[in-house]
Amino acid sequence: MNSQIIEIINRNKHFVYLSAIGINTNGLKKEILESVDENEIDIFSNRSHQMLSPNVYLESLIFKCICKYLHEEYKESMIFENKSRLDIKTIIATSKSLIERPRIMKPSDVVKGFKDPDYKNGFVTISRFDKELDIEEYGKKTTKKGTMVFEGVLPHKIEVNPLLDWPQTNDIWDNTYCYGKPFIQGFCVNTGSIETQFVLWMNSELLTMLGLKLDNYNNGLRALNSNNEIVLQFRCWREQLIGNGASFVGMDSNIAKLEGCDLILREDYFNKLKSIVPDLTYYSEVT
Image 1 (tube, helix red, strand yellow):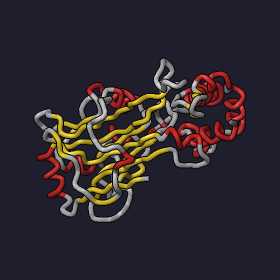
Image 2 (cartoon, one colour):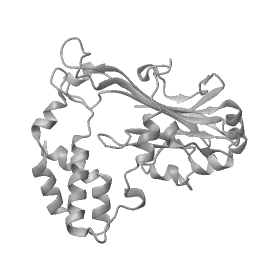
Image 3 (tube, helix red, strand yellow):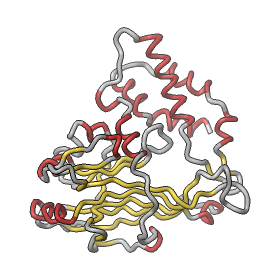
Image 4 (spheres, helix red, strand yellow):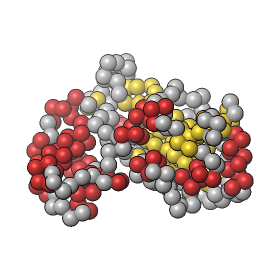
């Protein structure tokens, strides 16, 4: 368990930031490890399926210990800046973006390759991340625990994951998301974090070219045109929750069999996007 905790500490963005600016974090890491309450971790353990429920216990403990350490050692000179800040706006915006999962193909049924994007109610799905948990795989000695789908538009026909790994969601609100990169959308994963677990958003340069502006984060993660009409919208879902015991579903259910998010763009603006990027294609990567 200690090795897993150390891995979570090492990839925590606040911890990475302290290391990057030259602060010796060995003592802080030891303090965090000594503060871990194993009983708290057991609360999130699903013994029936040998799985750990998604939770923020360790991340919140790390954040608490780091803030305490900075207050004691650097309270006159140290603040989190830029990409190391806790992204409150995206946390609020994505919490307002939860929907019932659309009637779309399950990840296990998706075929890798080029295809046409989905059109529905005047909107086009320009990107999607979707994962499906395979309960039976957890009882086997395998690293594969289900199926994940990464779908999105690309600027030309090339077999590559269309969702650029771009973890800095603060950039969304600074209008610099994926700036300078030849990708239409970026994708952020924050496993076990206090911040949003999955975030999809459009390249800020393209957002500007389309004449769109961010809506207030209290209304969800979305962009409007000059008439304040919703044109681009992030949506997310978590469904078919599993609990302990034979029934799967119970008061302790917090492991989703189906979990994902997508980004939808109004059809007339999708046509505008195709005029900006003439060789636009839609690709599905399945793992």
